[in-house]
Length: 125
Image (cartoon, rainbow, N blue to C red; front, side, top):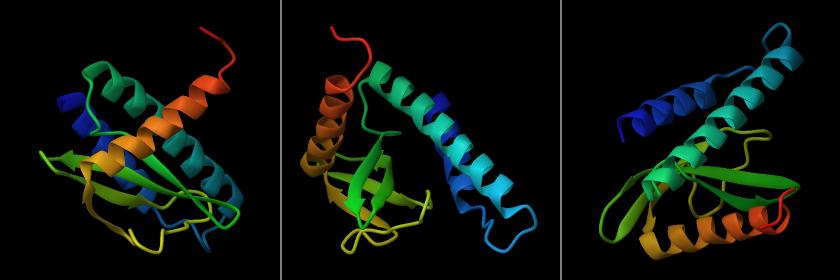
């Protein structure tokens, strides 16, 4: 879990970077998204290997993109999710910048994403 927690901190730090209005905005924006996607992929692999929801990303449809939330903590009944400023920076109207949600809901949302990923993966099992 130590590695997962370190990656979570890194992802939250990268996501908090404000690149709007900076010189070379396009380059900085692209670099930010690439770092986020790399870290999210690494966290997904680590969390799946550990059998935990901590470190997994919940992806909710919003407008023309998604609102992304990172599971940072779980208890017996709830999962704490934190908003990730990814792409257009959409936030879900209910989750806002983050909150605790029922663990069953977090698990179901992540399970649906995993099922879609499996359905459209390049290698079929």
